[in-house]
Length: 408
Image 1 (cartoon, rainbow, N blue to C red):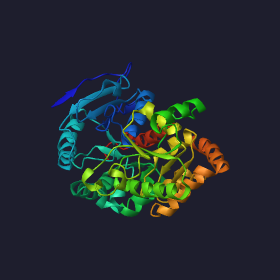
Image 2: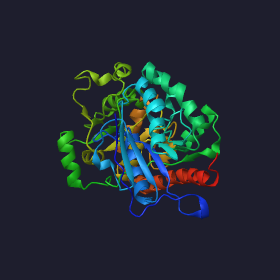
Image 3: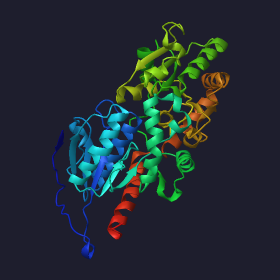
Image 4: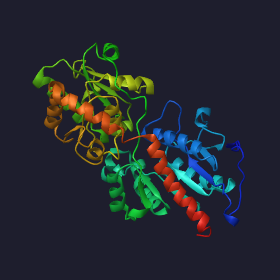
């Protein structure tokens, strides 16, 4: 089933190439991860960049393609045509059907000039020039973290998506180098567009911190983890490190874990705190939190402790810095690039190293204050306005290519 409503931008007329008149292009967008109250990292990237791009470029028409009914709040401006075309993409087989049969039909129907895909998925059966955002290729290096059908799909199709792309965006220099090395893609076609941080992440007052801690940790200071409960996120070693920290210091500090399970079958044996009482109630699992509440919980923490095996960027690190809390994170993949000298690092494979980092953050007030100051300043590097502008530069490069070389 497909539904579309044409909403034309005011005073926009589609003109031809001749005489250098303004050309109104049609930009189709994969919006399948715009899910109300279920935005994850890539979903937030999609939301924040499209909000700005559609607002700032009323001279172009955007076709937002959803795989299920959408929330009207995602139709940001009058130059957007929302299209619902199933089936909902809940399985690799459905990904394939949607991308290779549904998407080409929609691109043809709306005469799209460009297909922009913020989640990296492309259609191999269309000639429309395509721009994916490939956030990372962790599945190349850690395939067993994913169910067999998912990792098989990713590792078969993403090399082809990368070769299909006219331009590629990615979220860190680390991911750019990883894509180039793994897929033999030419560097000039890949633009780095760092993620941003929501303006709502700001330091809390002392009273606000006390209120959050009373609500989540019985008034005690707490370390914080934010992210999916996924093997790649290394929550198991994080909790082992926390337990070792408690054993060594005896400090009355809790651990708050914010997030939900992904790929439950692959995750079932990786989290030692799955069983009630393993840590005597010191670990608090909140599940998913709404954005406003998440800002409170981040701002109320003693420190963010985020030590994944692999990250293409690591948005929680920037959110924590913007909220004025110190950060312990991994010394691998993109995280040193994001954290710079404003965080402290641990080897994600060393439980002792993680525990030592926690101890430093819990006991060294001067270090904490230094990291807070450095983090607040560094977080200013990462804004969604910058992200959207850089994404648009890639789109605009393709638009100019279409204008200058329409037959290619």
